[in-house]
Amino acid sequence: MLAAIAVAAASVLGAQAPATAAPADDIHALVNQARWDAGLPGLKRNAAMDQVALDWARQMAANNQMAHNPDYAQQIPAGWTRAGENVARGQQTGQAMFTAWMNSPGHRANIMGDYTDIGIAFISANGTTWGVQVFAKYPNSAGPLPPSAPPGVEAERISSDRYGIPTSLADRFTPDASTVYVVNASSYANALNASAAAGAAGAPLLLVSSSTVPGSVRAQLIQMDPDRIIVVGSTASVSASVEAALGAYAPVQRISGADRYDISRAVVRSSHPDGAPVVFIATGRTYQTGLATAAVAGARNAPLLVVDGAASTLPTATRALIAELGATRVIVAGNTSTVSSGIASSADSVPGVVVQRVSSTSSYSLPAALAKAFPPSSDAALVVSGEVWPAALAAGAAAGASGSALYLAKPDCFPSTALSSIASTGVSTVYLLGSTTTLSPAVEAFSPCS
Image 1 (tube, one colour):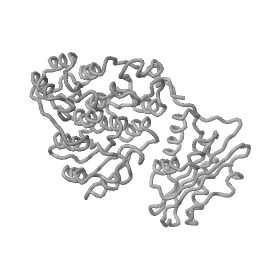
Image 2: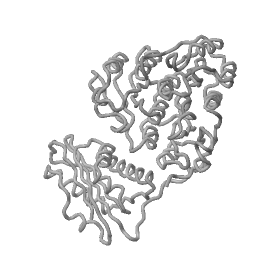
Image 3: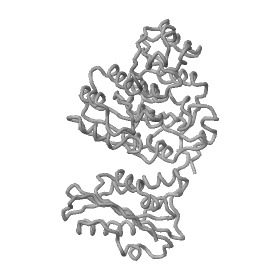
């Protein structure tokens, strides 16, 4: 029999402890998502075990002391072959409580353990919360399997080289754009910096090499006849000769800086000169979370600030820019392993700013969490590889410009979180970006990861 030990937050609870259904439901969904992503069946919600969990949560609240229930194994329905319990105190949301459990090896072992059923309680009073998970394995019980292909959803593949995919996206999603953003195809950092700004402007993101404008990009520029081209990156990234070549199609503006984070600030100042009430923050250390966040930010005409997610605090220049924008809300994308708690606290210290974190267990499940928090307005969704980024770089801008969700897939399967989100957001067409080597036919067939 397993049991995990949690550390209580130092807070005081009054006598009332009402049950809160929504956070408990969130915890259940997150548990099953984590298990499905690991190739495990989900856990079936057991009403009798819910009651055992709720009774103990209320008992802890009444005692103002977090402790394990010494009798839970006798209180849950008989016939189990394995049982366990997690308890927690002080997390203000179901997501935060689940994340705390997953960050603790003992609690994670229960969540990912050999069980079939789960009971969950989340109660609150006077600003303090108490949580209980009870686990059991029953021989004649089985948890839910990952979702299969969403009904009525069609898959369409957009395949070409790294320069051709962005031009195809421009044709499909932003054919009449008057502005075009351009970055080096080998720089995902500059693509992240440009994507939200491009999406907010309804503009495509096209790719070049450091020394050449590919023929497909030239043809696209002739076809679009834009009023301006914005190059993001230094001359080491996009050379002066490429800038001059682009000038044959429209006036060119270059946005540069000392590093990727300085460039991010410069892009935001350029794209939102009149300020912005909402600002998104994502890490610039990897492309996965930033790309999905750029799509959401662009669709809402909000800037994306790319930061060093491992840093302990925001740079002074970034804090000053948030204040300069007049932002009242900052959305931090990703868990604390992706963007540190220090960065969130630093943003929260800007006067007048409230910070919201949209978190998930992995980069593959973050797009679904973002789609739940910020529902897409389009019935289309873009899917890119979570492992191969060249085919993915222009997707954030296209998704933002069209109000579409953007999901990450593995080379040979669809994460269950993405399948669930696609089904729940009313998507009718999924565009896969990349060849069958990048996203296999199994992804095109909506084969769930297992």
